[in-house]
Figure (cartoon, rainbow, N blue to C red):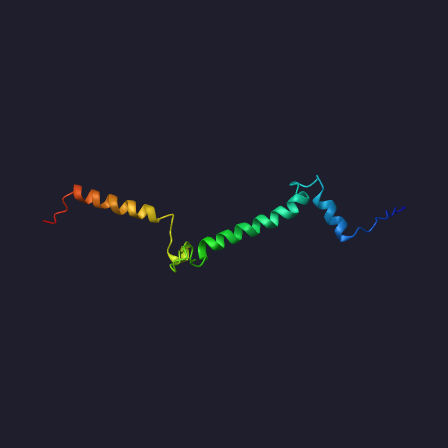
Length: 102
Protein backbone atom coordinates (compact mmCIF):
# COMPACT_ATOMS: atom_id res chain seq x y z
CA UNK A 1 0.00 0.00 0.00
CA UNK A 2 1.18 3.39 -0.84
CA UNK A 3 0.33 6.30 1.38
CA UNK A 4 0.04 9.62 -0.28
CA UNK A 5 1.00 12.43 1.98
CA UNK A 6 -0.60 15.70 1.16
CA UNK A 7 1.42 18.65 2.22
CA UNK A 8 -0.73 21.40 3.70
CA UNK A 9 0.55 24.86 3.88
CA UNK A 10 0.61 25.91 7.46
CA UNK A 11 -1.65 28.91 7.66
CA UNK A 12 -1.20 31.48 10.36
CA UNK A 13 -3.78 31.97 13.08
CA UNK A 14 -4.76 35.31 11.57
CA UNK A 15 -5.23 33.74 8.15
CA UNK A 16 -7.50 31.03 9.56
CA UNK A 17 -9.50 33.68 11.44
CA UNK A 18 -9.92 35.77 8.28
CA UNK A 19 -11.08 32.75 6.31
CA UNK A 20 -13.55 31.76 9.04
CA UNK A 21 -15.04 35.27 9.34
CA UNK A 22 -15.53 35.73 5.61
CA UNK A 23 -16.56 32.15 4.86
CA UNK A 24 -20.06 31.65 3.49
CA UNK A 25 -19.94 28.01 4.57
CA UNK A 26 -20.79 28.99 8.15
CA UNK A 27 -24.34 28.65 9.40
CA UNK A 28 -24.37 32.34 10.29
CA UNK A 29 -22.34 34.77 8.22
CA UNK A 30 -20.53 37.19 10.50
CA UNK A 31 -18.33 39.25 8.20
CA UNK A 32 -16.08 42.11 9.17
CA UNK A 33 -19.00 44.32 10.16
CA UNK A 34 -20.15 41.61 12.57
CA UNK A 35 -16.70 41.51 14.15
CA UNK A 36 -17.23 45.13 15.21
CA UNK A 37 -21.00 45.05 15.72
CA UNK A 38 -21.45 41.98 17.95
CA UNK A 39 -19.09 43.03 20.79
CA UNK A 40 -20.35 46.62 20.59
CA UNK A 41 -24.00 45.57 20.92
CA UNK A 42 -23.24 43.19 23.78
CA UNK A 43 -21.35 45.92 25.65
CA UNK A 44 -24.04 48.55 25.06
CA UNK A 45 -26.82 46.19 26.16
CA UNK A 46 -25.08 45.13 29.35
CA UNK A 47 -24.18 48.73 30.30
CA UNK A 48 -27.79 49.85 29.68
CA UNK A 49 -29.17 47.07 31.89
CA UNK A 50 -26.68 47.80 34.68
CA UNK A 51 -27.46 51.54 34.51
CA UNK A 52 -31.22 50.87 34.58
CA UNK A 53 -30.78 48.85 37.76
CA UNK A 54 -28.04 50.69 39.65
CA UNK A 55 -27.42 54.21 38.30
CA UNK A 56 -26.72 56.80 41.01
CA UNK A 57 -28.91 59.90 41.42
CA UNK A 58 -27.87 62.89 39.29
CA UNK A 59 -28.43 66.63 39.77
CA UNK A 60 -30.07 67.32 36.41
CA UNK A 61 -31.73 70.65 37.15
CA UNK A 62 -28.81 72.19 39.02
CA UNK A 63 -30.89 72.93 42.12
CA UNK A 64 -29.03 70.50 44.38
CA UNK A 65 -31.89 68.00 44.30
CA UNK A 66 -30.68 64.77 42.72
CA UNK A 67 -33.06 62.89 40.46
CA UNK A 68 -32.87 59.12 40.85
CA UNK A 69 -34.01 56.90 38.03
CA UNK A 70 -32.76 53.42 38.85
CA UNK A 71 -34.59 50.50 40.37
CA UNK A 72 -32.29 50.36 43.41
CA UNK A 73 -33.38 53.87 44.41
CA UNK A 74 -37.07 52.95 44.35
CA UNK A 75 -38.03 54.27 40.95
CA UNK A 76 -40.19 51.42 39.77
CA UNK A 77 -41.73 52.64 36.53
CA UNK A 78 -43.23 49.26 35.71
CA UNK A 79 -45.34 48.60 38.80
CA UNK A 80 -45.81 52.10 40.23
CA UNK A 81 -48.68 53.06 37.94
CA UNK A 82 -50.33 49.66 38.39
CA UNK A 83 -50.24 49.81 42.18
CA UNK A 84 -51.77 53.29 42.21
CA UNK A 85 -54.49 52.11 39.84
CA UNK A 86 -55.21 49.04 41.97
CA UNK A 87 -55.37 51.10 45.16
CA UNK A 88 -57.85 53.45 43.53
CA UNK A 89 -60.02 50.60 42.21
CA UNK A 90 -59.93 48.84 45.59
CA UNK A 91 -61.26 51.98 47.28
CA UNK A 92 -64.00 52.31 44.67
CA UNK A 93 -65.06 48.68 45.01
CA UNK A 94 -65.01 48.77 48.80
CA UNK A 95 -67.50 51.65 48.70
CA UNK A 96 -69.88 49.49 46.66
CA UNK A 97 -70.06 46.69 49.21
CA UNK A 98 -71.28 46.81 52.79
CA UNK A 99 -68.65 44.91 54.75
CA UNK A 100 -70.61 45.12 57.98
CA UNK A 101 -68.52 47.94 59.37
CA UNK A 102 -71.37 50.02 60.76
